[in-house]
Image 1 (cartoon, rainbow, N blue to C red):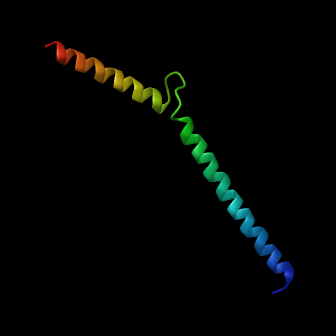
Image 2 (spheres, helix red, strand yellow; image 1 turned 180 degrees about the horizontal axis):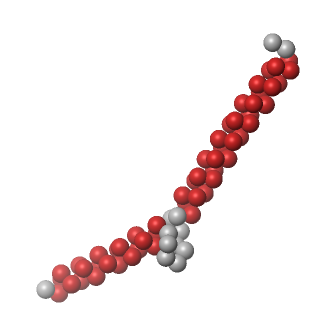
Image 3 (tube, rainbow, N blue to C red; image 1 turned 45 degrees about the horizontal axis):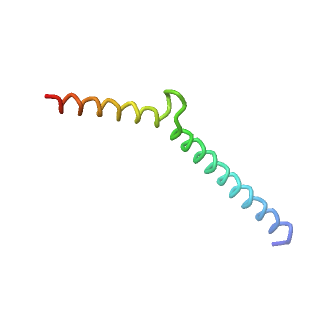
Length: 64
């Protein structure tokens, strides 16, 4: 193998690693965005609504 072949392999490996890192970064950013409240449609908002309903049920049970 010549130097050009090694350079080609190195560039290909760097490209693949860079694409993988970029994909992981996008996924992490996307999933972390779901954990922030945004006014109703995020996972955080859904959990908050469920917690509020459970608190209301506990209050109703405690009153009886």
